[in-house]
Image: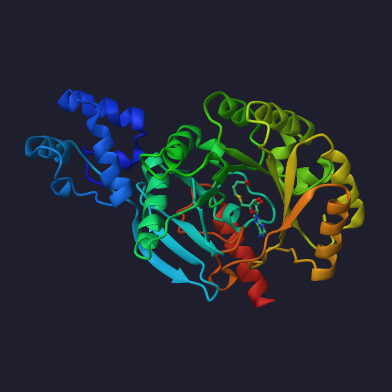
Length: 366
Ligand code: SAH
């Protein structure tokens, strides 16, 4: 980032038109700039040869396209790639690209760490150090797209399932998802851009007013007593309110859209048949598909992954109750890139990281 200049990765098409219009009087020039940056991957104004020299100079004086800086890049034996990138506030977050039979799903971060501290998620243990800008979020997609462009591919799906709670960084997430779905930028179908929330209920109602992106919720428990323990924000917005918000959101989408319900299976905690039955009952009347995520371990988590038989039985029960139920296969765990393993480099402002590290050290000594 360059002091005083605007990072155009943070501008939706409308915002860029505004900016360009003020600079040049011809807002439609924004289209050309977007095609260069997002379709060609060209972000140096000097190379945008269908724009006049003076306009290019004016742009360069006031703005630029700056993606987050790649600090490290790790590639898993299954082809998953994880980047550690430095964002505008100086901290680092992780981005994960998951190739799967011609699909390229990118898992992007929306915050540095997370404020919510779900009991089984390692991101929460890092504490929190602020929101990403829209440009930081869009820049993650641009970087991955550049990597894929080399082999003639592009990002086909984006999930806001990296570090952070997207609905607590509302404006940046809305702007960034607009660009993901904009034909002049990444042109990804709205069915393939998914915002995942731990249950920020007011955020879901706000989102319904301004977006038709796909929605996923991190449910993880079929009743409030258990969910209060696993997903602490449930104490503020209990399950019934969360599901009401989801029904409202779905009501604003087309007939053929549905909600994704994420359910991380924790051995002996939420993986029993009684939980499966209760879950099937709870979701009656909610148009959804269920994603089961066997717990991905991290140091001193205090949880274990259920064995494959228990996972299968849970899935079968839900399928027999009529729910499309996918088992999310673990990807990139050899590079700690699986769900709930993203940690980045967060200079914590909550002291949660310090307490967590003390627990890890205590366990190593024991
Ligand atoms: N904060 C948002 C975005 C994160 S999505 C949300 O909660 O929805 C990442 C998903 O992985 C969430 O469903 C999260 O609960 C789940 N998860 C977190 N830690 C995990 C772990 N250790 N193993 C498996 N899934 C985990």
